[in-house]
Image (cartoon, rainbow, N blue to C red; front, side):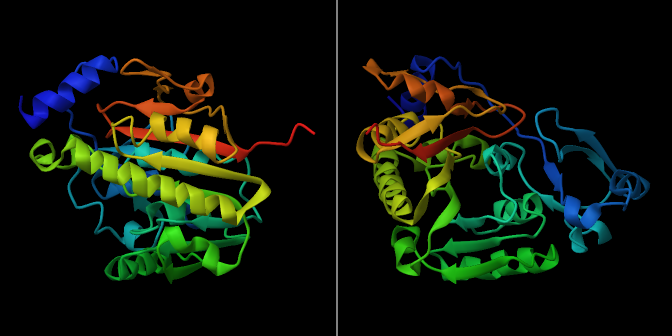
Length: 296
């Protein structure tokens, strides 16, 4: 059995019939910068036609463009970010962000960091971490271009976040993952189940560290662009059983999380997670976690 046949068979067992997908290019309007700028009209005049993404408040598909959307004056002014549609979901599922202390634990290249700052109206504070030093330049440049004034960047492994000696109200864990075939034509030849299991282990280590940094009333949003349940539902099932975390319902695009994975019955609360199969967007998974309250 080829690697592709192996993974495709797994997807079918999870209820999705494999089909090639080419996600549409998407942008997200940075409302703090674009307010009153008539961005849609300005872009249309420059040959960029947009279509509203129905499940995102500030997201738009790029329908047609005579120029690169990464080279317009509006982009350079920070009025919008180029950000894959499904990747715009995680930051929106926090219940409240203004004036909060926020940790973006795996932040580069910065699309979600900028989105968090925009949702916060540049209030509060964001601590943005990334383990790869060479990616910090892209992260810092993205923050500067979009006029973000409430973020500080650290070159630090998310598995060492507690060393900051800070407590956070909100923690975004867009964790390193196996990705999926929509963003890499050679994905099926590059990935094995051992890669998936190795990534899932790192993700559990990051989750375990994040708990040390979370305020008692805080929230964690966990997301991946992996389709593999080891990195998604199975990790969330593990978190509910080992980290004293509870999964909260999220009202966003996607299907319910799987509660039966290859014959293994998971905690029923996993259905509150959201799984997005590839199509107009890349594959994605998102879940919101909070600390369990003691019953005493």
